[in-house]
Length: 339
Image 1 (cartoon, one colour):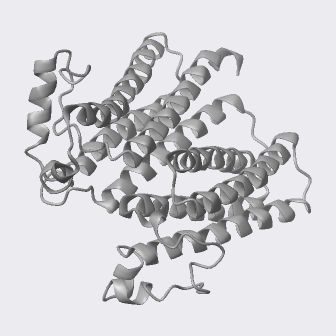
Image 2 (spheres, one colour):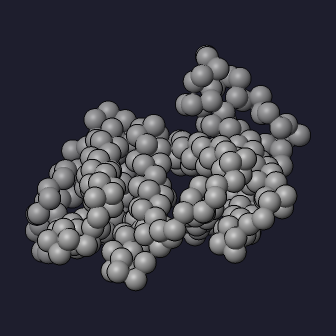
């Protein structure tokens, strides 16, 4: 571990920046700022407009797109309002640029200094590709809201969000490989349960993206029932014609799935925790599972509060940030149970 310390710090710094980027992305979504920058320029958009003339030109360009024409034109939307939403989208992209530099420059340095063994080099190459693809997904998402509909596709938003989580988890996994190079005996039953739990957690993150993209958190603001004494709200059956669309495009259906999978994730983590009591675990394994139980209950409570209070920005962002900590604990626990 000692000789890889600088590489580990580099990878964990990348994890932190991905976390910050997703948090800022959550603020960008909740402030409806994501469509404020209508084009992508790698160099010229590095800094926001520096003069009032440049600001007015950017605002005039924004006025040509659906969000202004169909929504904000009716809200007495002024240049000052545009500057506010522009900031969050610009800041989100700016962190992406910083993340690129933080990854690429040390990567080249480590490559020259031969600090990366063949296996780690291969994994870092995968990370480089994932980072580039994530940038593409960001623009692919924004583009969906610049044509006819003044909102981004919730499918693309969920893809962009989930891939950021996956990139974070894989970066952490690579760092953990360097932190814990020694192999231990694998407890197969716990490893299988942890893998299934991770799959359901990622599925829950996807539906979190659906909820965010459809603004489905602003309806049925009751718990534990959806409303009016209904666990399965009747509106689910009338929103869309097919069952598939009801649970992928209908607001009520998407919220129902997100609520339900939350119970499944909690149950699986508790099952993993109590199942582990039958085995002799290392200190790291015990710590990972203890953190997992604590964080899943904290996330569950945050989810309930976010729903009951109709998604205030601070709660929405905190709920999204906590999902990162939960995924980090899940990744750590799976790594310790696998290797």
